[in-house]
Image (cartoon, rainbow, N blue to C red):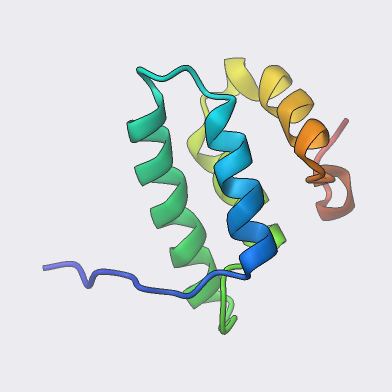
Length: 91
């Protein structure tokens, strides 16, 4: 049985996560929320972070979002103040 991750979030990062979710079509939102949240928490644990960071969140979105949707996702990230380029992702 997989352990449930309860990694705390940086409050500013959690706020940006919710702003990103608001931009996702309502019928996809619950799936996106679950997948990205779980991935961000797993990445934080793997990196030995005490909380989910902006980098964890950005990587989780890139990992869990189908490639065909990366363009709109990047636009949404910039709109909410998530600069993915500083973590090595192409503009």
